[in-house]
Picture 1 (cartoon, rainbow, N blue to C red):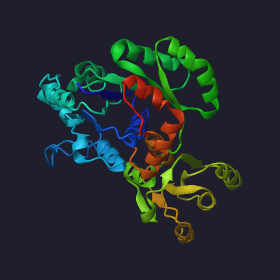
Picture 2 (picture 1 turned 120 degrees about the horizontal axis):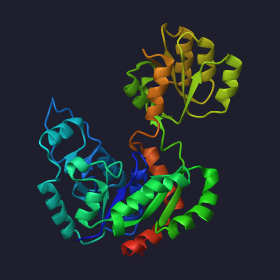
Picture 3 (picture 1 turned 90 degrees about the horizontal axis):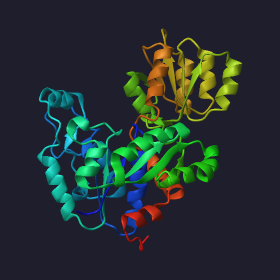
Picture 4 (picture 1 turned 90 degrees about the vertical axis):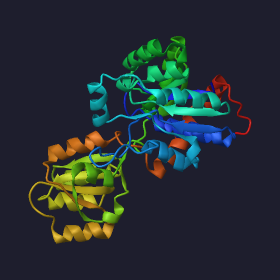
Length: 366
């Protein structure tokens, strides 16, 4: 079988796609043939009441990576199943847990692909995909693939999940990349924690810092999640929101607080015109008004002048904040600026030479 690398994680939204982009670009620079796919699709717009599943089933993440890297259609591997409520309901009702004939066909494809590397992105945790026969462990063993885990690091308690993964994956686990590390903790982590992990048999291929940009969300995504009405600047919904601020204090305190924040979404009551105007003078990407009432004409005029989208929601402030907080870090890496940053992040903070050497890939052209 050709060389196959699985990119997995112990928990959702760990940063797998960023690593895929960085790895793939280095391989392309070294003239290594690559293919990419997600055996279990998790990001496909599909309504079972309207149409059957598309064929071939190409995950939206796969299409984005392909378009970003300039991959041809034959370099994109179709998914075998879609992780969705409707498909899970059907498989559960049928007591069906095997991946089916498509998995056998995938094995044959990988046998024929003897040059370069096939990169497959697994689902969002160690257990996700078991109902489809496509969990990380099932893929690793069934495809005889090597695995790199991208893991969100908090503190030494994070090791438990890695040890559980090592126990499940055995020799298939090549190593790990620690992600979302606080920048001021990186030196200590590399000096003290990484050697300890290596001593436990966990090769560390990288330590990547926390990135507000990669965990940011577009104004358009907030509009969708909140069901918000866009009052002005609908052409600016591609702006990226990195932080959330709640305008519930007096205006002097608010102005001082807003000055210390960057690329904010500011949530405040529709009746707090003073806070709203103060927010527009800061690094605000969108202003979200809650509660009864409508914005004053002078507020709309100033928002249009500064090109800051103004949104109105029916929810109260607390509910609105909960929706936005859930969105941070839980959105797909589908913006070009995020892809560009991912390239740099992986190149600067991952030891790709060591990884490629373990995989047995010659990288002379890089």
